[in-house]
Each structure stands twice: as structure tokens, then as C-alpha cells.
Image (cartoon, rainbow, N blue to C red; front, side, top):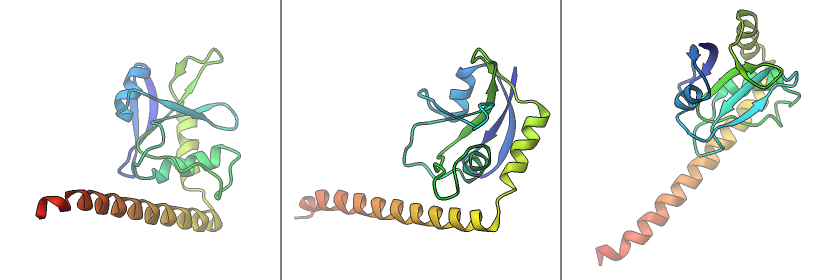
Length: 149
């Protein structure tokens, strides 16, 4: 059993145990997984391909602090994200207490400027998603309008 950090879509971080990639896929709720790696190559971020899911702010902020991206360029991670580590051979390994502590601290260490930039990006993304949802609903309603005649 490997210890991982589970950044849930509900905004909370959970310590979880997995047996392998199949368990990570179950946590993420997707068979097709993608991975991002921290700048030091130590931490793996397991996630689903980009989709219409909500932004996972905890995972995005942790990735911001473990990568070389800035607040205006960090990818906005979506859905459920599982953080783990690997051996030099690429095999999955559980996080140590020190690594877990460092990741949790990273989430809480954004500066006021980073918070501001991320808030603007989160808001812009939310407005874009809302417009896309409204346009899709309008198209759907328009396609059903012939039934009312």
C-alpha cells in the first residue's frame, strides 16, 4: 500500500492509500490518466485529461509551488488529482510524511500577488464556462423549438 495525497473536487485534501495505478484511476474516476511532474521530478500529479470539470484550486496551488510556472502560467488543474511519487525506475511509491507536509504547506504559501492572479484566472475561467454552458443550452432549446409548433 502506498500513501498518496488526494486533492478532491470538493476542495479538501485527504491522505489515502493505494495499491497501484488502478486504485489511482478509481480515485480520479477515470480510466485514462495523465501525469504532471514537479520541477524537481519528485512529485507526480495524476489527473484526468482536461475537461469541463471545475478547477481544483488546491492541486493547482500545490503545482504552482512545486513547478517552475508562475501564477499567470500554471496550468489550471481540474477534477480530482492524486499526488504520489516514484522510484528512479518510475515505479509508484508512497509519499513520506515530510513530502506530504511539504505539499500541504505549499498549498498555504501563496503570496497575495499569486492569490490575486489566480483569483482573476479562476473568475475568468468560471465566466467562460458559464457562457459556454448558456450557449449549449440555447442551442439545445433552439433544436427543440420545432416541437412546440
